Image (cartoon, rainbow, N blue to C red; front, side, top):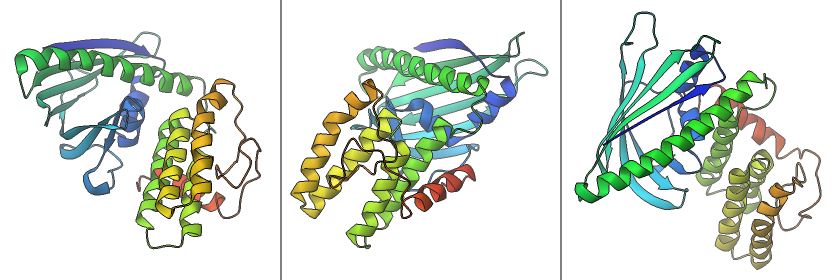
Length: 285
């Protein structure tokens, strides 16, 4: 069964084509509905290249959907002077076939018509699961295209100095990965990675929630009841803070500081954030 969806993007085709090459942009536009991770915490390549890439899929970042092989190839444009087609002819634990093509077409106003074309065949009980998977593909690619429109609108508005959303997410992931890899360090040192992730991700609901979830897990690991209780309280406050646009900027998110107090940049936190942003900007993540 097929899904065919198109949407106009407020950006020129060359800019959209450049974003399509970035794995960080891919992770940004698929989140938070589906989150992709590399097996064993392997690093992501900065850009897509022809060949296979093995990933793990998580619905809403919580429900495992099994392994998926992303199989990238580039197809020649259908018309002379057009843009090449990016194809992922992949497969996974749930899907026997997930053949996805992305095509770009220049519009007269300088913007881009972006199209997703997907063929779906389920691996198990295809008579039942293929229609259900097609319905999910409709939801998933409508979500992706909405995220693409937001990203293109930000580009069109000339948000030059701000950190792009995809880079914010990539730098946030970089900080959490550093926390995981620094398992032998003293707790005070490891907390700095999580505090830096909180400061960086605080303005985005999904990242804000993930930072406090990571802090809660670590507090439980350390058997620190005061910190764990504080993180539960902050998790309850996160949606309200975003709904009311009341976010204490620079706050490190720990139970030992007020949940409502803005904080000046901390000397032990700022270098970690700067390093994460520099690493993601240069494609080292």
